[in-house]
Each structure stands twice: as C-alpha cells, then as structure tokens.
Amino acid sequence: MKDTRPRVLVGILLTMIALSACFKGPALRLENSAGSVVVHIETLGEYMTTVRRVRIDEASTGRVIFDLMTESGTPQIFNFRLSAGENSTHIADPEHGSYRVAEPIGKNTFSLQKGIRYRLMIWGDGRSPSEADIEF
Image (cartoon, rainbow, N blue to C red; front, top):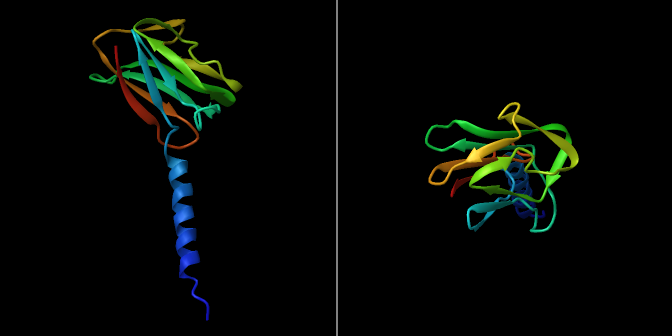
C-alpha cells in the first residue's frame, strides 16, 4: 500500500497558503525622499496591483484624513506619492476601474503635516489591509 501522507501534507500546505492570500493586504513598500513618500504596491516589483481602498488616519486620534474607495470595476495601480502639505485627492490613476473619494467630502485636496504620524492602510483583494506608518 502506497503512503499518501506526503501528498496530504502538500495539499494542506497549499490550502493554507491560498487561504492566507485571501486575508492579507497587498505588498507595500515605502520610498522616502525629502518631504514626500512614494507608496509602492507593485506586484513582483513591476505589475499593477488591485487596490480597492486607500485610507490615511491620524495615528494618535484615528481621525480619517483621506479615504479612497472603489467606485466601479477592479482598479489597479502601481504606486502613488504623498507629500507634506497639500495632496490631491486624485493621487491614484487606476487601470480597469475607478475610485471615489469618501473623505474629505467635496474637496480636491487633503493635508498631511510635518511631525504628525499617520497610519496608511491599503486593501487589495483580501479582507485585511496592509498597514504602514508615515511621518514627514
């Protein structure tokens, strides 16, 4: 009789990997430069990534500074830049879909101040966001 344990273990491992991909957010890498941060979310460093939501909170209070949500389709982007001072609410130019600005309502800009820590959260296809702290 043939031992099927190795196949069962491989099947369990592949199932666990697939399930973890369903729950985690997209890969996130920050590139700091003078007074700004480029937020990289490229898949394998060169492909667009599905991004369903981008939110920036003030870390100490939880106050939402910026919230960008999927409006239609499956928006995909490579990266975007955040700077100290005024930022356009249209930071992301998606392929294959569109976004709507949920916060700040009715404004074309939002402000990020030097010396304040912000929490950046990005949701992809998974249930949980990727998170990073940003401070200028």
